[in-house]
Image (tube, rainbow, N blue to C red; front, side, top):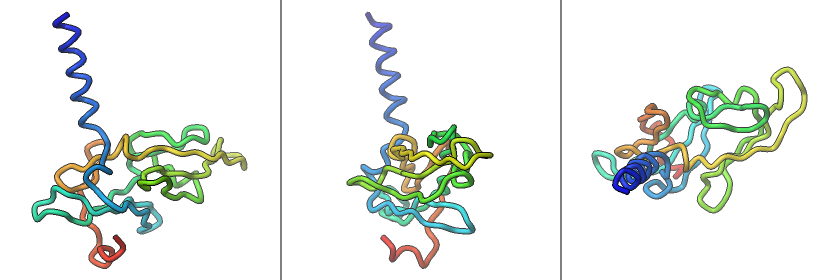
Length: 142
């Protein structure tokens, strides 16, 4: 029984380390810089408290057969269009993505960014990368 309990505790700790940025960040917004999508938000936990942070979310998601999927450096935006954030907390990324990069057929797809992106010391991160402050003129967007 002790082994099962230890295993379950380790699983819960691992789950707690991933995602759920929305519990410490507010008003996520989809931004574009240099033809790449960024998720911007005001997040708690920075060196001076709440700070404006952004993450290149092409580093977090890719297109697998017309469906958004979490994987490092997926660059989903190269084969997806009309992307936006939806739902009450604005954490659901929705797009129309090509089923086949060579074909003309798009599929509607959604993914909950709150499961894969986290707030680490006031910075949005995924797959261990990120940690960038917003550009100075963007703070007013939030």
